[in-house]
Length: 61
Image (cartoon, rainbow, N blue to C red; front, side):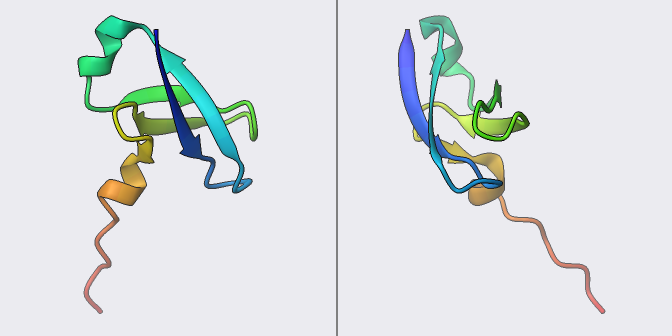
């Protein structure tokens, strides 16, 4: 079992997550957040959200 901490973007709270050891090789996992009840895409190796590592591109005006 691998444990990690990430920050919920909705509440701003630190949340602990865990995954089976075999899932730690996956770059991102979907994790149910107990703080807000939503789903977040998290990198379990570093605890960063996908949106933090790959910000959205702004459309050209």
